[in-house]
Each structure stands twice: as structure tokens, then as C-alpha cells.
Amino acid sequence: MQKKLIALAVAGLVSAPAFAQSNVTIYGVADAYMGFGSHGDNDKAAINSDGLSGSRLGFRGVEDLGNGLKGVFTVEQGFDISNGTGMGNASRQAFVGLGGSFGTVSLGRQYAPGYDFQYDVTASAPIGPQSILSNQSGMTITPNSGARWDNSVAYNGSFSGLKVRAIYGMGGNEDTYEVVTAVDPVTGLPTASKLMDPQDDDRFGLGVEYGNGPLKVGAVYHYLKDGADINGLSDDQQEWLVGGSYNFGVLTLAGSYQEVEGIGNLKGVDADLWQIGVLVPVGAAGNVHLAYGEVDFDINAMGVNESAKAKSYTLAYTHALSKRTTAYAGWNRTDNDNGLDLGLVDYIQPAGATTYGGDESDLFFVGMRHTF
Image (cartoon, rainbow, N blue to C red; front, top):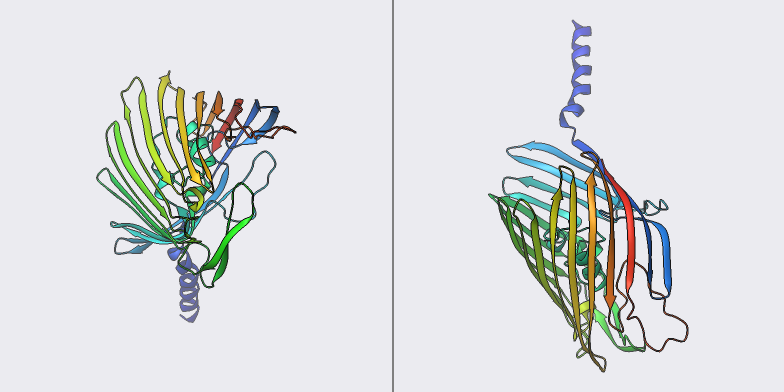
């Protein structure tokens, strides 16, 4: 009898942890392409990471807590597949939260709504005009790092076709005062300074989207508080976007319009961006993507009063070799006014040049993405 009781006790000890175990999933993306192009006098021939999607490795866990509640976590690290760098810390996402029928509330480094709600026929690919122009213009309504916010509490909910996303980020200056200095963007010299308190760099985002069959429409708002708060030189960065898409069967049409005021918390540095595109299915596994975007800058700061524009075009073909593997090829051109250097190919200013930028960036690419 004693031996039976001991055996039952041991079995209970072994089985108890298994009963409480989380369901953990390992997932990721491996994406690389060959790129050939130029930007002004700078030529490029290289293997690059992240053509359709950012390469990443992640761990996602869910545990049933009972009464309709579940504990969740995600830890996700991006990396550059061309050289293997970037695996040092969780640079994409890292959060833990509580979910239920009400949605999910989570804490950590997370996506702002401007990352999720994009209306782009390249599916927010780094090679697409919306991604290029929004990211390189300093916007946070972008499918890039600008929409990943540290020290944040977020809410995500879905209700009968309606999605709601909200986030409050506490920035990086949490428990001390810091001296903040404004810098003249032309001369690089300091112009003024002040003490910054812990709440000065907070930020807020809200997004709503409604989907019904082939139709999706949505709107996003981001507010980034001005940490420096230097009169006449700095300002809060405010952004909004409206967009939508419709699948007609033979093609999908998508587009969006967004504005930003106070880019980089600099007063008088504003921009607006619009983009439109079509996606045409080819057979059972292929798609042709044609997208155009344009960003217009209006700068009235630090004695500078001027406007400048950049236009970006992408033509691409994607082909699903399997459920997890996609081959792709295409071309992007980004045209810049003087003073701008946007595009997929880095810009190097020629020696002796009297003006900056203003050249075209061209890139031809052929690549493959595998998801797991």
C-alpha cells in the first residue's frame, strides 16, 4: 500500500507541471534578395535581407487560465539574413498580456496601430512605396521600426468585422530628469536646452478598421509628445491616416492618405503622403503588384522655407511555390527633388557637390521568402 501511495504522489508531481504548461510556438521569416541598382553616382550590387517581409525569429505562447481568460506572450527578434547580424536582443516585439472575449491587454515593446492598419497592394513590403516613403520621412504610421513603441501598454480587440487598436507608450525617460538640447538641422549647432521630465516623451496611438467581405476601411491617429518643449523650435508630432481596399475578384485596389506635423518633434516640419496600387492575380499562385506613392514636405523652420517632393514606383511579381515559400522579382524607382535622398539604394553625396540629393534611386530585385 505504501508503495502505491508513493507511486501516485510521484505521478502527480510529474503530471502537474505538464497540466499548467503554456502552448509555445516557434515561428519566423527568412527573406533575402539579390539587388542591382544605383542612386546618383552610387552603384549597388548586393544580397539584401527583407524584400517582402522582415526576417525574424519569434516565440509566441498562450496559456488557458480558465473562465475565458488566457495568458499570452511574444518575443520576436529581427535579423539580417545577408550577414546573420541582429540576434542580440528582442528588437521587434517583446510583451506579455492577458486576453479574453474583451480582447487583449499587453505590456512591453509593441506595434502601434500605424503598423497594423496599412492599405497597400505590396502587403506593407519593404520594397513598396508606402513603406519606403513613410519610413524614410520619419513617420510612425509605417510598417517599420517607427511603429514599434517601448514601455507601452496596448489593447487589441476584434468584434464582428471591427478591429480596435490602442496603445500608450511611456517613452524612454522614465525615472529621471534629462537635459534635452535642440539642434539646428542646417548648422548642427545647439540652439537651446531644457530639463525633460519623465512624462515629456510619452506617446499615444488609436486605430479602427472595419472589414466586410471584399471591403476594408480604416483610420489611424498617432500623437508623440514633444520631449524638448523648446518654444519656437520644437512641437508635438501628430499623424493620421485614412485608407481602404476592395477586392473586385479580377483585381484588388488599395490606397491611403496620411499627414504628419512636427516630424522629429521639429516645429514647422510637415509632410503628407498618398499612395495607390492594384494587385492582379495571375493563375492560381501568382500576383502582379503595381504601386505608386508620393510624399510632399513643407518645411518652415530654422530660417528654412521650402517644399520638396519624392515619388516612388514599384512593379513586382510574386509567386507562391508552396504555402510557406514565395519567390518574387521586381523594380523600384524613387525620384527625389533637391534636398531629398529617399529610395532603396543608399545615397552618397559626390565630392564638391553644391546641392544635396535630388537623384533617382533604382533597384532591380529577385528574391525568396520562407515562413515557418
